[in-house]
Length: 122
Image 1: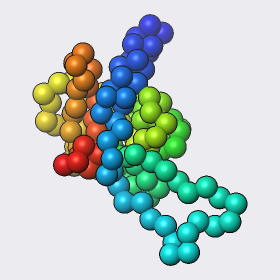
Image 2 (image 1 turned 60 degrees about the vertical axis):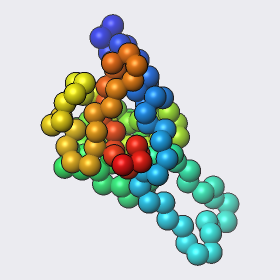
Image 3 (image 1 turned 90 degrees about the horizontal axis):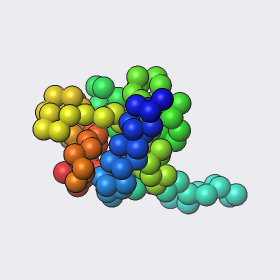
């Protein structure tokens, strides 16, 4: 249980440090705006329809259960409710753990996670 708490803490720290970049995915709206009685979807990173890479990293999620199918342990909403992508932890300096169009990004405490490159402005 303590390991799970540590991993969740690491993810939350990662998402807060790296997961709130803008420019991830392409939001779309109809020319007439949202349907009546609905709120427009807002996200700093990750939008409905995002499929993620070959590992599923970057796939849109709104809750933890959305990442189960991709076999990934975390939805970024766990640490930042304004981001919506499936992710996993990675090792600092790794170039092969996150798949294409993603980066293993680390915070100042060397806590690292896979982040879609478009979320980082790349």
